[in-house]
Length: 202
Image 1 (cartoon, helix red, strand yellow):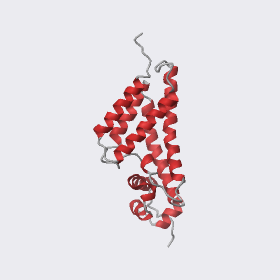
Image 2: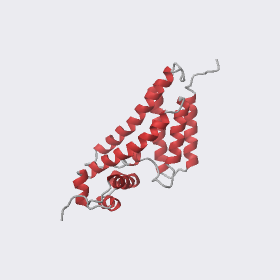
Image 3: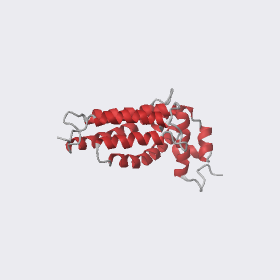
Image 4: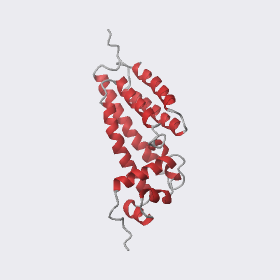
């Protein structure tokens, strides 16, 4: 018998299942047995398709980033910097407490407690989070150019702040915080962004 992947192998469905295992257990906590059972394949098929466990994580992250990217496009399409922050952070409060998904964020959960041999994983996750921060920064740069943000506003610092809040919300959600608690954090952060908005009443 060949050791390759079976003909009925559905790569996207398998990655969705692997993504959930990494999301729930983190990279270190997710075992090959858990991953292959969830994906419906055997270990040789996993290694043939993805090389190793870290290769599978990167493929799962590509899938997660693609799905999240569509949502981030909607976030940055909001008409003002305040609306961008509100759409993102309130959306995170909803998504990260949705019982249909594991709590928290894969880009936070996946890299918790990585040991020897897994040193690259936190950097990989940080790079994915940085993509979201870059997208926010570019949007806030445009907001400042359009007069939506004050002249004194720092788009890069604002993007870093919103990103940091989003990561903190992910940690809270994974620790059992409910939706209302996350919405309270989001609300305070949105007010902070609003404080950087230009006064258009003048």
